[in-house]
Length: 113
Image 1 (cartoon, rainbow, N blue to C red):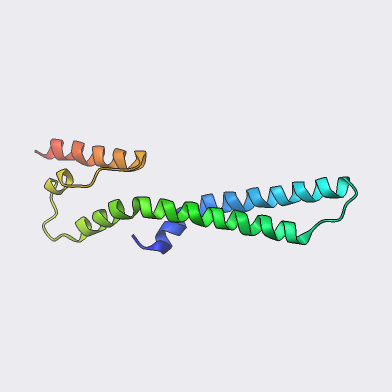
Image 2 (image 1 turned 90 degrees about the horizontal axis):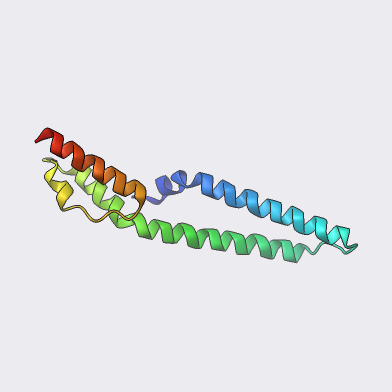
């Protein structure tokens, strides 16, 4: 699996993270202004960098976790003599979505036999 389609699949998570960080910055700014203090731009920048770094760590871990399974699926797709027998040799699914797909393929295999 290439990184670009992976990121495209995770756009909702990225959007959610940006929205959440924006709301936290607004809440911080309002709390500081209400207390009568000035807003520290360095604190806001630190919050943005920290949130961005944590989001990157999560996305990298998720990519690494699913990389083998999705690469195996892509290799199977390119196999000229693709048959349901490849499903038995397939790596164990890691997520519920992967598990459901594997169960569906196995069920289709039983129907065709």
